Image 1: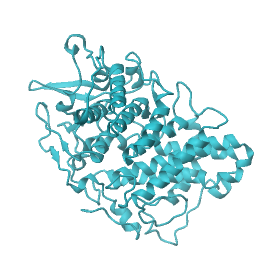
Image 2: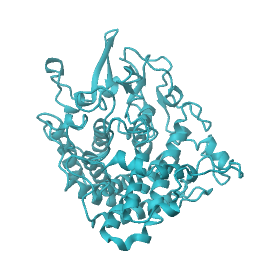
Image 3: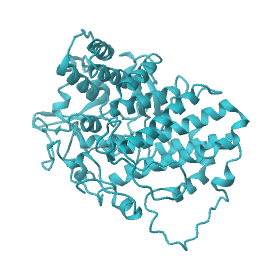
Image 4: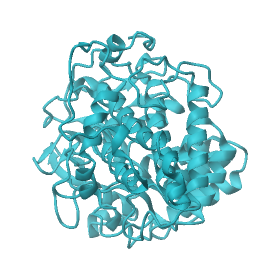
Amino acid sequence: MEKLKTMIKTKYIGWVASLGLVLGLGSCNKSLELKNPFGLTPTNSFTDLASYQRQLSGVYGAFASADYHNGYTMTTEILSDNTYETIESLVNFNQVHNWQYDAADRQRTFFTSIWRQPYNTILQANYIINGIDNVRSENERFYNRILGQALAARAIAHFDVLKGFADNLDRASTSPGIPVKTDTRITFPARASVREVYDAIYADLNRAITLLSDVDAAINTATNKGGIDVWGARAALARVALYAKDYTTATTQATAVINQFPLATRAQFPGIWNDANSAEVIWSIVNNSGDPGSPFPSAEIMSFRFNRNTFGILPAFVSTFDTTGFAATGTGRDIRFTSYFFLRNRVGGADNWALSKFRGKGTSADNLVNFKVFRVAEMYLIRAEAAALTNNATQANADLNALKAARILNWVNVTLSGAALTNEIAAERRREMCFEGHRWFDLKRTTRVVSRPVTGAGNPNTQVQTSLPSTSHRWVFPIPEVEMRANPNMTQNTGY
């Protein structure tokens, strides 16, 4: 995928995008005249399938924004029990970390960004979805390849907003969800119910899977996983279905992906994180030097560019890894430990661990590295959880042991049941997918309890809040105040 080149070619679409955002347009002066300096609009810019293909770079560029997968996706980890704010922090995210946020979103526009940027992604996708049928006859399978990616992208972006701003995430929930945007017009949509949002997401992903199963050319290669192909669409549906408690669909889609992608070996695993290989990666945001949007995943947590460890790894979380042999050899039995963390310093006899999962490509230490959106390891954990919750302990144990055997040297299989099994699957999700944007939402959809004791940390910030009860309204993000002012049909979440 010629990411940077095609982004330049579609610069005009980025201009148009500023007109179509749901957010913040209600107070615009009607006399304001905006002129497109490139002389191109959605009406006259798309003339063939190749022009729609170029627009895909607008979709992937929106995903790659610092306000989306290259930033706030994993920054939601600071809400969870994986981190604590250190004394190196410049307190940019102090209120977010301590669950003191409100609709005004005064601190770094955190919630405004994670509301707005997915909708920008949806807008970019809708330019394709709404017009590409006009040139479908040019090449049916080329059409499938373009439209399938756009539909999958729209579904993923809708889901990423839904899981943050909706309270009840069950498939049949009639609780307030989010607006579903399927056009490029400036409109003021009300919130659809959670069930209606899922209906739209499922429809987009199922159609994407059908289209992407019959394309004219491969979207990804063995070494470049920068596009959403049929396996990315299936992985997305598996994730969505798990949240929706639709365990049949979650199992079916996860199994399809598992059958296609092997787990990385212990030898391959460290190379995933410095882009030495793409083992078990299904879709990643490709970040290269010179790309726009400050593509530096995790820089707000541990910045190697500025040598600042804003959020350390909670000692209670570190202790869950099997580090046998680490003191003697520098490598514990669990290959994830040294692939994900490094010893920042020792203060008062305590070890302070920091995140190295997104250090950089090769031997670089600049946070410039691809962000892995879907990996097959997640599919094993999805299938394991779905199996455990549908009384299939045999399958759940098989998947859990398969993943552990791939990560932990000389792993000996164990058989668990009941609460012990579901608890261990949750613990393994926490270890395997930490700082990939999952932990807060896993807690939200299950226990809704955060406990982050800083005992044992050598440099904790004394202002760190250590617990959040399940009854707190903070589990649901506030609709940004600017959206509330701009959209007369928007309703706010309880408590804000």
